[in-house]
Image (tube, rainbow, N blue to C red; front, side, top):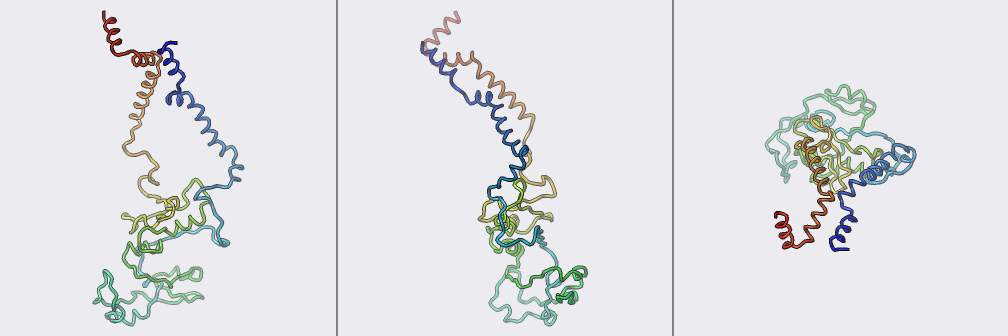
Length: 293
């Protein structure tokens, strides 16, 4: 066996990457299709298998009384002092400067110590068996006041928009802490493995002050962060093709690739390639001269 014949046989025995995917594409596709159809054809077996992963449902530490929770964070609402947090002292000191000892040693942005106090603009009354005090601008809420819970035992010094909103949703005025929804999803998981376990609906043209930090996962894995649903454009980001994607250009590239592949695996082209590699340059020059003659 000559050296040329040896190299040609070696080349024929090689399985190139293009040849493998071309010849085995149907086989690989069948394997993938079988994996997909397994869930459709055997739903009972699939349902019986316990899901795994970070979003797998987990048993709560205590017996659950609520099946569903909808959390509404309504930034920009009227002041709680005009809704459900009655402060009799504000009426007493209405129009006067705050006591000096109240602001002594307290420094904060946007607070002018020379500003006078302002009492609520609306009348308050007690409603229901609980005797909860509500403003007159909440006539319908007063009818169900015994069915709701009003928490007035929390306070904070964060009053600027972004830090206060981040504090409300994460428990910290600093960026980088997991949100309430992220902690809930981390602790309980999600019943659906195909849909986000934590979604966010944001209103307003400028979005929420503080941005994605209000529903982020912080130092938890990103699987637990909220997925915003949008009212304009794509409902969910990063699911559609980018704006520069052009199907005609992709089709032309596919045709070019197919033509190149056909040319590259041609036996004639293979023989020429290996012949060119085996014959010394001086011999090729002599052959070219003989061919021209």
